[in-house]
Amino acid sequence: MIVDIHAIARRYGGKVCKGNALIPTPGHSSRDRGTAIKASALAPDGCLVACYNGTNADALAVKDMLRADGFLPHDPHTSHTSHARELTAAERLSIRQAELARKRERLAAEEAAARCAADLWRNAGRADPAHSYLVVKALEPFGIRQAGRDLLVPMIDTGFRLWNVQRIRPDGFKLFVRDARTAGLFWPHGVHLIDGRPSAGPLVIGEGFATMAAIHSATGYGVAAAMSARNLEPVARAMRKLFPARELILAADDDCHLPDNLGLDAARKAAQAVGGLVAMPRPETRVADCGADFADIPRGDVAGRVAAARLEV
Image (cartoon, rainbow, N blue to C red):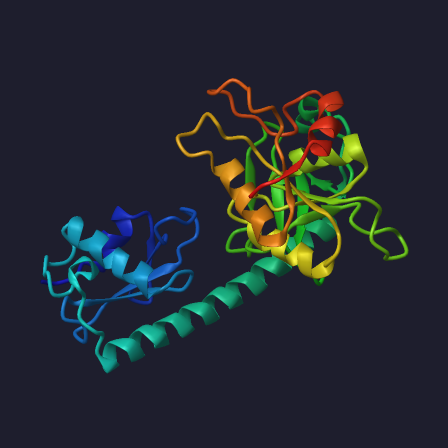
């Protein structure tokens, strides 16, 4: 059976690059094409799969997905659900080489994207307080800039290097710099004093810029926006390394309107990883089908809900 790399790329929203179908790794962002699939006579089923942002188990799961969708032959001896055979030395070497090549390409793309982000930030001006997104969210434009009609939210690492910029359009649509890094990055505000010492009080970590800006406005606490639920734990761990003894509060987005409450679950997991507390925007008696974050509730309630943060065990 001939493996159709182009058909695989089309089916899973990917692209073909240097003979590889680059597709999103299952469970990751649809924009994050972290799985490389290559036709190879070295593999019994005709292709090699490498997940640069996953494990061998993820790669085997991708092969099962390809079989289920008819791109690979059904062979119980090659399915990890049926006691998969050991990979050959040639397969392991090819997979490792593909992973290293993909990692080098990814790092090069991230460096290029970081330069684009730095140019955007450098050439941007002050954010307009009358920008429609700020008006709707009732926020001040601290810690951000504006380029044209877009607000710019800087995303840095723990060494304070700018890697990415989130652009927020007037209608609230958000996007990152193409190919830019997101994992472990955050938008900070009020985390340190002007002289470099940590600011007073706990450090609050949450998802979006608006959520964390609302919390800072209401409490004066230092805040860090991880930009996504999946990034909460990496950012929380990074903050714990920077502040070993500081109280950390995870401000959850309450996604109770979804089948899986991703925001709350991710906040609880991150808090448990760093010995932190969890604050919810609404009490447990909230309406079950109405999600919320801290930018959605009255400012007078924000400080109280953060103060009511509790340990999750």
